[in-house]
Length: 458
Image 1: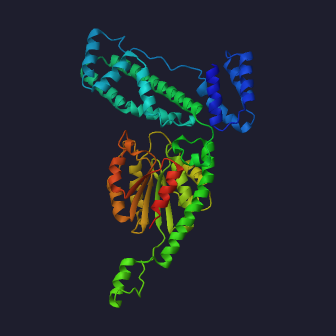
Image 2 (image 1 turned 180 degrees about the vertical axis):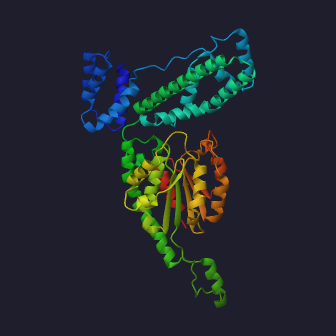
Image 3 (image 1 turned 90 degrees about the vertical axis):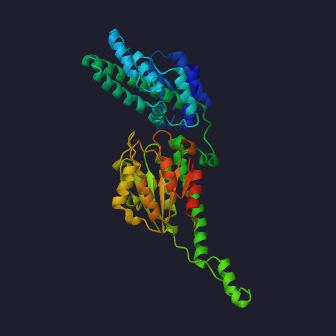
C-alpha cells in the first residue's frame, strides 16, 4: 500500500499538483494512524494532507478511484455447464468454421476464462510508447486494446456462431442461454481491459518525469499531454506563430518585389552579347489560400486545436482560410473564429457536435464537403486534412479526395500517427496516401509548426 500511495503522489505531481516532501510525509503519518479499512476515511485523509489548493481537488478526485479501485472485474461464467454432451459436440463442430485465433478466443469465452497475463503483457509491449498520461483517456486506451485483440471480429464471430447453431437445430432456449453468458463474459473482458488500461496510465504517470521545460514540451507527443501541459502549449503557439508570421511576411515581401529569374535573364542577355542588361524576375506570388478539414474527435482534438491556432494566428499573411471540423459529420467553423479565441471556438463547436466513441466518419465528411463547399477549392487553394485516417470501417470515399486533389493546388495531410501504424485496424491512410502531395507526421507541436512552415512555402 505504501508503494501505491507513493505512485499516487507521483501521478498528482505529474498532473500539476504541487506536493512537498513534508506533505507526503503527513499523508503517510495520517494513513498510519487512521488505517485503510474505511475507504472514505482513507480518501479524506489523503485529500486533507496532499491538497492545499481547491483548484486541485478535481484532479485528486479523478485519480483516486483509479489508484484505489473499490471493486474487482466481474467474474466470468462457464457457458458449457448447462449443455448436454450432444449439444457440446454441436458447439465444437460450429467452432471449426473460424480461424485458429477466433476459435481460441471463443473457447475462452465459452469456458469463462479471463484474459491471460500473456495477452495483457502483449498489450503492454504493443502500447508501451503510446500510453497516455491523462486518466481521462482511459476509455481511449481501452478501445485501442480491444482493437489489438480484434474484439470487432470476435463479436462478428459470435453472431455467426449463434446463426450456425440455430441452423444445426440446437434448442432456442439453449442458444439464448449461451448468448447471454457469452455477452456477459465479453463485458467482463471489456471491464478487465478498462481496469488494465487504467493501471497502465497510472504506472506511466507515476514514472513520468516532472513538468518538462518549454523546449521539452514542444517535443512532447500531443496524445500524452495533460490539460496543464496543453494550457502551456497554447502560450507556446503564440510564440511560434509570431516567428512563422515573420518568416512568411519576408517570403511575401520577396515575392512582391519579384525574385530574380536566372534562366530568363540569361536568355534576355543573348541579344546583348551575354551582358545581362535586362534583369528578368519571376512572376508575382499571391497569398496562399487554405482549406483545412480537421478531425476533432477525442484522439485528435489537441492536434486540430493547435493546428487551427497556428493558421488563424497567421491569417493576416494568408489569402483566406476556410476551416471545417468533423467527427461523424462536417461543420463549417470559420465563423466561430471571427470573434472568439481558437480554444473558445472549438469548445463552441464541440457543443454542437460532441465527441463519442467509434463514430468518426471521414468518408461522410468528404461527401458533405463535396455537396456543399466544393466551390472553396480552386487552383490557388491548398487543401489540408488533419487526422489520423481512422474511419471506423466506414467507406473512406477515396474517389472524392482524388477529385479534390485534381481541383486544388496541392493536398497536405497532417497525421500524428507514425507510418508503421497506417493500415492497422480501421486506418485508411494507405488508401489516402497516394492521393496526397505531402504527408507530415505531427506528433508534437514542434513537428506541427515545421509542417505549417513547409506547407506555406511557395
